[in-house]
Image 1 (tube, protein in one colour):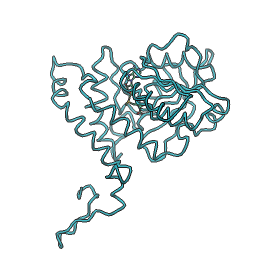
Image 2 (cartoon, helix red, strand yellow; image 1 turned 180 degrees about the vertical axis):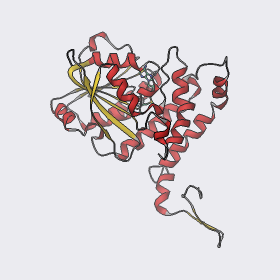
Image 3 (cartoon, helix red, strand yellow; image 1 turned 120 degrees about the vertical axis):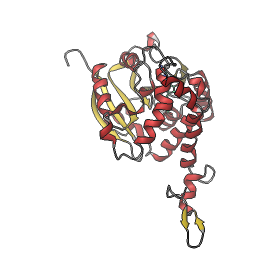
Image 4 (cartoon, helix red, strand yellow; image 1 turned 45 degrees about the vertical axis):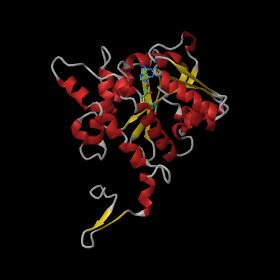
Length: 293
Ligand SMILES: C[S@@+](CC[C@H](N)C(=O)[O-])C[C@H]1O[C@@H](n2cnc3c(N)ncnc32)[C@H](O)[C@@H]1O
């Protein structure tokens, strides 16, 4: 804590001092606990150290199953809640083009919604819109349904489903589809993007949030959280996606140059991108490429 500039030390007096304004980020009870919550990531990835070493062996497994990360859903939910606290009201929908859609009582779907933090927050802010959240994990969908009940939301539906195979009747249903921190985790993001295009209306918008790094290692030198996120990716995101057959193995650090290329290749046209205040993430706004584009 001293070498990280959290606690101050006065060697001549042999005393330590924790400035009161830093207590907030260390304490979940008295503040947002952001340092404490982020620190929970250390035991989460330390628990799979031997699994990762096994993957490095010539005939070792290709990846690590989700079941080896029993605390991940809780960790991801707490990180999402920190993000929501830090961001301006309506954060994800702040662009004018999205605002115009919301006036018209939009139908919105979050893919990979986890425990529903973002969908529920936005559903409360936009009560005239209808929200759907889907996730492949039964456990997180159960938690999302409980959250919606506790918040007394009547404009939200959560469903357990694989995003690469959504309901036939969802064709052209949605005005807005969004993913938060999901695409780099997917073994077959191409299949999910084809489904997103199918369920979007022709004038629908896809909002994709993902970590904001570059695709080339050299371009990430000097970015404060880059080293941490290469490590996190190796131990969690890359490891879980490579567990599945034919995985693309993207990982957290696939970077904005590859994201833009990928959006284009899967039939989406990215028309705007912007960073969210005080986060390490970037938001891409895309629409369907129509034949003739
Ligand atoms: C890193 S978590 C992000 C959760 C949430 N969006 C957030 O920001 O807190 C990625 C989520 O994607 C979900 N997921 C992974 N593959 C999926 C798939 N094929 N279909 C639907 N959800 C999927 C996971 O279960 C997990 O909840």
